[in-house]
Image (cartoon, helix red, strand yellow):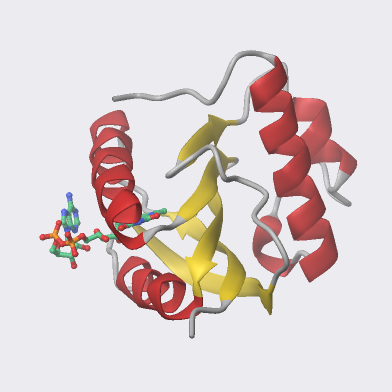
Length: 147
Ligand code: FAD
């Protein structure tokens, strides 16, 4: 039996991370996630990654286990992992959003500090922020593809 889940985590971007790394991650993610029925959204802001993975429980946890071992980031923290009724990101094998001037207010509306710091976010806030970021990206014409 397949069980639909959503896992949200945050992590710190590696110091030597560059645009080519992002391109590689998105290419690989989109290929792998289509194969395993995973959808989601990856956000990069203020030196942090912030990602939602949705799909079959086994597929999501297997993918997260691979992501956790990846040297292109560190200090990965699961903010939320729960069974869900439906997906939020059905249209994206892996959408990608970078924080910019346009979406900055969204990030800051969930921030106590002047910098966005997702590692200690509460589960509900993390999910709401990702949904809002996704909606904003759709309104302005889809997520940045970098591929
Ligand atoms: P291969 O591509 O054959 O890779 C084998 C090993 O080499 C893996 O351990 C991989 O981590 C490592 N590796 C490959 N290229 C590099 C590189 N340039 N630098 C350092 N190590 C490298 N993968 C997904 O499938 N879905 C996702 O949604 C997803 N999201 C990610 C989000 C973030 C923030 C990061 C950092 C990575 C993400 N990845 C994702 C990539 C994931 O960590 C693995 O690299 C990928 O899943 C491995 O794919 P593969 O099993 O086909 O192995």
